[in-house]
Image (cartoon, rainbow, N blue to C red):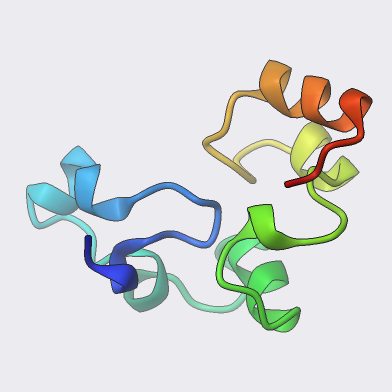
Length: 85
């Protein structure tokens, strides 16, 4: 696995059809500040991926569109269960 292709939301860009077709350079190279809330948040906190945050899953990724590719039902369960790792 190429670490550079691990998106800040946790999705592996190397498995994305758009990336594989040459239509995207991956999370870090393709996006700029302001393009993706999750990317900006993770980078500002000095983390590798969103799931490593003490606040995961936060209200923002649970309620805002296009902040994660993770299943929202699973995220709500995770928040209710109190297990953020």
